[in-house]
Image 1: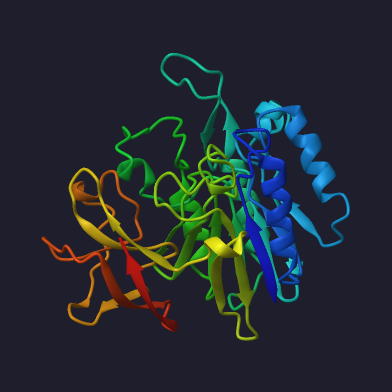
Image 2 (image 1 turned 60 degrees about the vertical axis):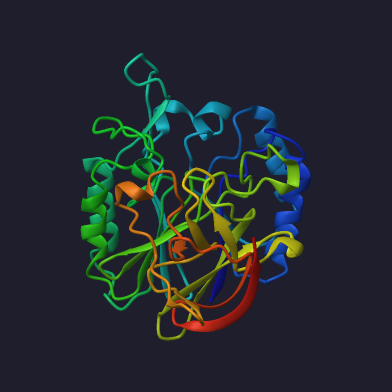
Length: 338
């Protein structure tokens, strides 16, 4: 079964967002998916909602929605309903769960944002009840706008938010505990405008870059502000054995590439930046061997993307041939230029 997850389209921000969203839908539908999941953040104005409805009105595929924080700004979601709109769907043997982890916050000096992330007792009870009769071999996909596991706040040098976190979800660990009994399980997220794939035990956590990238600030060339990945979406497949695999795809074909040679401007450290890399990704430079992925929890990773594979100190070659294997399959050899 093939389906697509896309997120953070942010209509009516920056430049050319309606054109970009139309191009993205054209690209997504070309894969003939069985359904689409929108990960939230349509935009911050009522006009954005109207444009989204116009762009999607003729789409015949099921198009599911997971509310983001900006749905409360645009009026798409009443503030009093935030954090309550959970639902699940069974499709071709897979179980899809959509969780609303965004809650409204009345802005104050202490908490200036109008949202925070929370999996409250009502959500946890609802999820436990939803999963209780589900066989453990059932492929399980869980969607929430804010990631259930992330190093993003730390890597971006932000102070830890213990109360009302805006880039994390309070009680996320309790959600993950409810998912552990399932053999094939993955979670899908947006919010952070980056690709970030990692694992909590056997659960794959997949945060996907925004369709808007850097909020359309450079129109259709608004690459991610954190990891420089192109604007795109995630194509997922669940095979007959229940195994879940995915591929990140740029919605403009000329931007689709697996990696880049990257030099950090402040430290001059050099990396292979694999745009959808994960702990299972293997990056090999023939004359150097296998490169290590950065530790996202290390102080030296503050200000960096999580999908960087470091080259030796003093590395100054302007182009390099590299073998990249994503998730133990599809080895690709490519030449990267600085």
